[in-house]
Length: 392
Image (cartoon, rainbow, N blue to C red; front, side):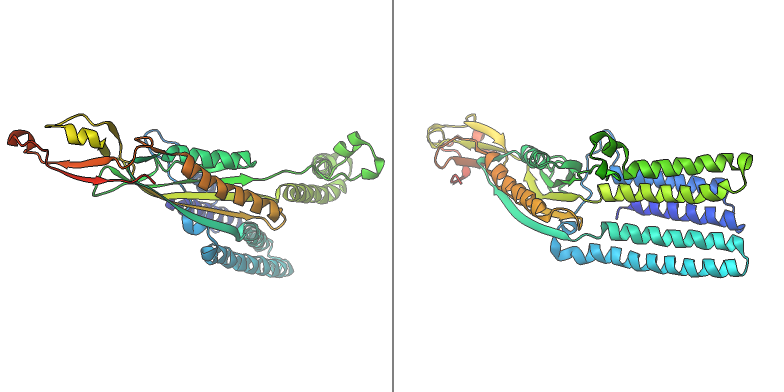
């Protein structure tokens, strides 16, 4: 969890406590609690959806340990712990609510309602997000001079492959621009990039009059329509109850409750199925300039010559990890097929975005060092450390 997310949750928690304290008369309540709650929600939104600041390189919010099955215990355990506290709060709040009503402590009863609802929310969110990693795969890509490797293009190819499979990129960062510079070599980038992609198909609302066999009636008479109509009718009865009959508000209150429950049920059942693909690309990328000479150039030079090819240093070692998870009702076979397609894309892209700086020539000689006193020595041969690099 990032520091921003921690601060956001603390603000939200304190804001709720201050508001509840104002209700029961034990705290300032009102504006102070609302301000804390608003600040917490804003900070959470910034941490959740990201904030683009000019001049600041994007960073990937997920780590490899978050997307591999062997470390699921850490992520799942967090939600298991929260769920147990949520159930405890809900059960305790319900019992104390009944006890407060029996003692006619109505102010305290309102507090215990809030505690119970908080417990239900905590438990519901924990159940919602506690999904195990379905599959994961790690592959290491190693490239050495004279081969060139386009790290950013490799990342784009994987991201677009996920999009072609029907997934929407939620968060992402290119390994060519994210990470950190090596503290001992400014030409070395400790890169970390990747993305998180989600596929969340939304179903049509269930019809409640399918026996009519009319396509227009099926689109109008749905669970969504039932929930919205019940909510609005309840609000109408609450607003005109005093003018017509005192019993109408008693009908409006349950209608509002039923409407909210039906709308929530409809939303959850239509959007509960989703699958996610993850990709973390981390490793070392060198940006050293390397001069490469053909053998005939080396044999024929007297002092110094321009290199046959001058290219960026191509040393790159990337460890690419892909993972996948989904909800319990999502089609796991579809997720597995998409996961295998992304694994194949890693292998294909790693080959497609490697190229040899010297084409198909065999064994170019790499000039790695020249004696600084060579030009003044008058020697007929340059003093060099040289080696032969075989094409991979």
